[in-house]
Length: 210
Ligand SMILES: N[C@@H](CCC(=O)N[C@@H](CS)C(=O)NCC(=O)O)C(=O)O
Image 1 (cartoon, rainbow, N blue to C red):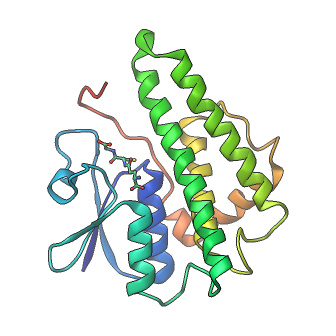
Image 2 (tube, rainbow, N blue to C red):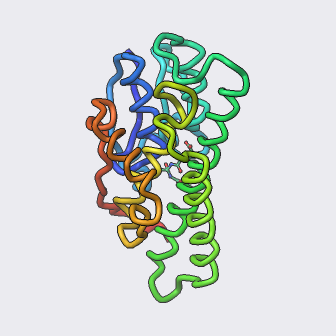
Image 3 (spheres, rainbow, N blue to C red):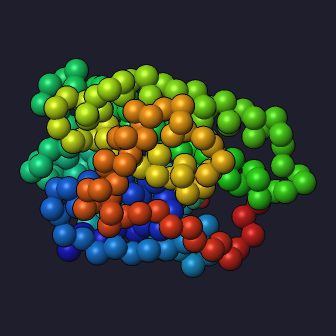
């Protein structure tokens, strides 16, 4: 059986968990704290990050966007990408945007852990990316039911996971009022079984990271 090294708050791991669930692929969930020395991810990914998909032959697939591509190619049932090239590119664009937003939030989270040594310029730079990314996702979403095409797919997974992570880590960012279309989409997505089974939860980090 496939195994997934995951972390409870990770938006990147959540994308993969949702994709596996939506495709009906059985897997064993291995929940770790990726920032602690106890994590097994460095054994499987030289970049020392999760999510990592462990295949039955012991090899590994890492980087969430690549894992999703791997799943789409190897398990084409319940496709998460549209059938047409323009649709695929539109969905991948959402993923790029949402991953970038998550990167800016993760960088901010750790910069804030520096407390008095945190750089306000660095935090402000990341905040511009978060605000800009959010605005662009809302613009692209418009009043659509699904982010791309006429059915649930990668664009919805990417958008739903970024909004879920933002609500957990940055409750002070007010996005529901300014972007009611994203609030409605997020509420709808969080009803799906795949989203309900992967609601992000904060973890305690034991090691010193920064
Ligand atoms: N671009 C990567 C980002 C993955 C990532 O940053 N994962 C975090 C957990 S949310 C991690 O494992 N960080 C440990 C580290 O960077 O040392 C992906 O999409 O998979």
